[in-house]
Length: 199
Image (cartoon, rainbow, N blue to C red):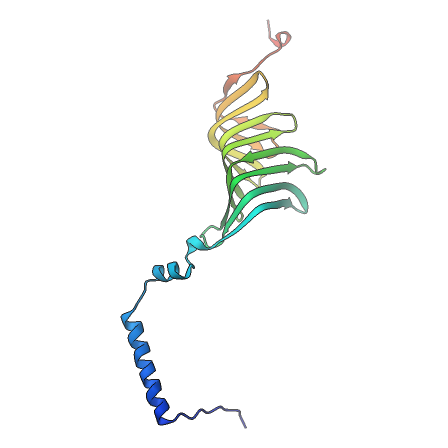
């Protein structure tokens, strides 16, 4: 014997239910909102699907080896975007480590956008990278590819290797620890010791 549940409705109840159904159908037919209006009312639009955090520390590792630590003042994640991303605002700092967990270089900038799937971090505004030798890179935009562990940019760059040695260029490729770099369209002033100048 199977379990079945029956409900018994009296005639007055049927009349009341019919009235409710009529007015419900009338309401939905006469009042129709667009998806955009509904999203704005409920706050479920893609523009609002952001997770926010402050004073965030993120650790980046590869095959169990820590490669970098990112310090961010404001962090926003948008998972609803076609290519999910995270924005860092109000400043960030990145410390890059070698296999011995010694800091090889430090990057600072005002903002960044992280594309986790692609492994790209685009840092912008007052970008500065300094390696352990004291060499300094300055530019307005830099791409850090986490998978290749390299920096790229097609923007103007300035590299200072000593007080009197400054190089400029348009575009650059470098290792994330800034131990080597290649500048495109290189120009600048390099101090040379007199004994190294050929006769």
